[in-house]
Amino acid sequence: MNAILRRIFTASLLMLPLATVAQTAAPRLNVDYFVLETPQPVYELVKGKIEVAEVFSYACPHCADASSTVSAWAKTKAPDVNFVYVHAIGQPAWERFARGFYAAEAKKIQANTHEKVFQAVFVEQSLKYDASLEDIAKFYSKYGVTASQMLAIMNSPSINAKLNRSKQFSIRTGANSTPTIIVAGKYRVNVTREGGFKGMMKTVDFLVAKERAAIAARTPAKPPASKPPVPKK
Image (cartoon, rainbow, N blue to C red; front, side, top):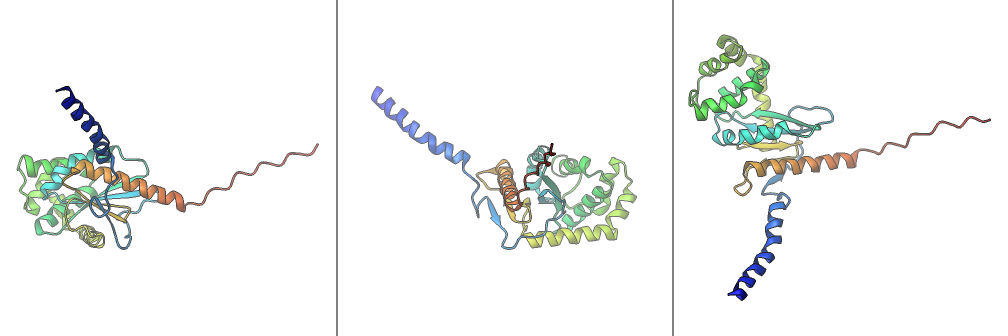
């Protein structure tokens, strides 16, 4: 019996390194992330910042599932990272929610309403996933803006321009499913069955570090400061 136990214990020791490697392995190219064939302009250029853009929809159940993980990551992101939401518009209902999202952004209430929209659609079911513009405007009226004001903004030329910008960004980066995260206009990240949403954000951190290193390699070193001449006596 003792001999059998020793063999089991020895076998378990041999398996430990493999388990450790599996847990700490770097994200896999063409599985956990993809390199865009041609680097694309970022959605919102901020000098000195690495952009992380989540393409999502309020009518997407997977985006609702990911939202708490993504929001928690955004609160602890590095100072050199600019995180932005890009609302997808692939379907009529998605376009209506996108109009609400960008109107809320214009009224500076989006940060307060983002999680609450998901809650209303997928938990409380007080807002349908194919809600009308009027219903979406009415939802936002609880946050310091009237429904009529929201409707006017949602149908304005500036929001039309935002929708087109979102559409073009999704096309250029190949973000044809949600949620998709684009890092620095170079890398596309989707959730995997193995990693889940936490794994997705670990891949984002990996790619941010990769881009940070690339920027550092391109930045010329500053020449050493010259010492002032010593006055002659």
